[in-house]
Length: 396
Image 1 (cartoon, helix red, strand yellow):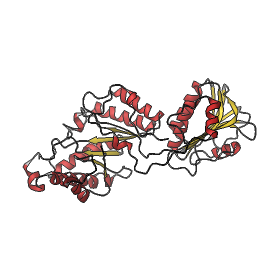
Image 2 (cartoon, rainbow, N blue to C red):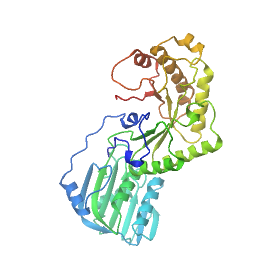
Image 3 (spheres, one colour):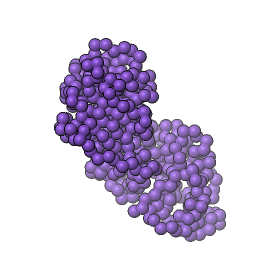
């Protein structure tokens, strides 16, 4: 499961000018090599036709049996089975022609079912381990976050099973999305798929200039991201005045409600929703009230469920101050601008991130955000910025 590019085919109107997409494509952890396809994977493709799963799984091995999808299916879930994964599985079964879904909990004995679907890994569903043992398949217990096992076949007791076992809830959700791509009729060839991501963060920053996406387009984008195992979306449209030119002003109620809907849809799709505030056009770094205004805006987004925040200083003139007090406090030149920006970001880190348990690390987009050479600006950022703050960067 390795995605490292923007879905440019998603919508022709997407533009990359001014968008800082690369920062999200880079993993905070080193990518893991993807094993080459083996004979089992090749035979799985032969049995099912082309294995059209995107992103391509790490491993897909065929089983000799074929599972028929009956009109009635028993679905076994645990008390903490991921709700979004469960919803996807039910939708997929309905689309495949299942008319009746008998949903039972993981402590209910299942007898007489022609097909049993187990949803949830070892942390979610106590019955999954037994279902995997019946198929002779190892679970996802040793996998990294977001990994999963999807097993389809006939168990040693003669019963057909589909098992979706994630290392965590996100993994189970991704197993459900893989099942969506495999199951489109009344028959499903036996297969065991094992998959986990190469990149910690996989997604898109919406930060281009010009007319931005509509609200409905963004909702559709988030659904698309979930289906294709992208886990990050950062809201940064340049034409939203409340995050750029009018960043100090609170959002009107109706605008805040729309962002809240996006946050909820992102959560349903296991997508982290990040929010970018870009105060650089008018900010007065030396004034404590400015940090207070930043944290107030972030607080309003926190109430909606946002947990990932970015302070961005891109696309501004780092030789220009917005008040005389800043020049007196920080001096002149790129290094002075870097010191002022680090000062403001550190204040937000201390006043907001540090006092909100569950917040993701604050991110900072510098004015100089690309290249490989050291400058007076980057040296000052490295010197002054709180080490807990993540710097967005690209080597363009």
